[in-house]
Image (cartoon, rainbow, N blue to C red):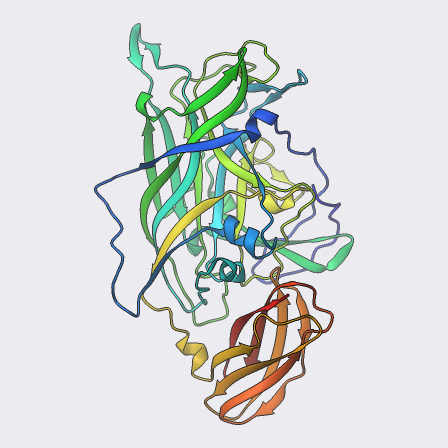
Length: 452
């Protein structure tokens, strides 16, 4: 994990605790050799119908891709496949001959459309005032089918494996935070499904507002490429599923109200015994069990830092350390956020949303029309931030980077009703994408600033 965690800030509404270091995530070379050859549309009779109304906004959001363009400035994360099982009975043998249990049991992701990283991929950034509907979900799966039939009550039957996808709004989501010993004044945020409602028997969470069941048969099989009996690469497929879940919104102080999350659980029909080998990367023999994996991503040496409760996008997982109701490090229960690993983990997925109200009327009643000129701007230059006020007000200018860190803050000044301008100096700002936010008693509004 990243660093030794020791001190924690007291946060209203947030759960905090201390984290110690654990072993690094082990990934074989074959797990990194992945590709996608097709897309499956689940429940094909339900289709997305884009609205033609001018006041309705509808689009696909891919946080991992937006994060690569925004925070990483175009650098790509490394993709790999990781398999999940309902328990830790099934083992993996790596190329060095070491045997490890398949210790991941749930993989999921939290989605927040308020994240400024979406600006880097041309998407609209919502506010906490904007409720939306999650129309559809898409991700890449790797269903490696190695057995088609099994004996049940003396009869040979076809194997049908099951995937459960659960969906959550803020009523079933827990928001948390933690601080590292090296920088105790900074709180890192994360969000997972509610931790006290996960059944250790079924791996189902009772706070989910909907659960989809996918039945996997022979026709759904993806490909495992072998060389002399040793796995060399995996070929998966894209999955698109209609969801139709509505998020919440708020005019109050809860900036996390319109979070959405989903989790994925795999239940194979053929159960493994403790110590059985599910796959071996060293050329040794393994049992022919069906495997289910998902496309994840990380970058050596890179840690995702979520510093604002206004925008929480993170993957999460349930592993053997918290699978049976244990509490890790005093506060992590049921789910672990992907941000706590040394190389932060991401779950690339696409969320299609529709909002009937893309306006920011609650904010714009006081401050509106923010524009930044020139944009892009050179380093060590001056830019004009033009905005409109509905009435006389004190306005403060704050510039943050894509991680939410404040890099520049000007004292509040009095401005009159009508069009105004404030000068922002880019001295000391490195190349990248920033958010310029104007704050007043009447509201706040932001715009993107690119520094070359």
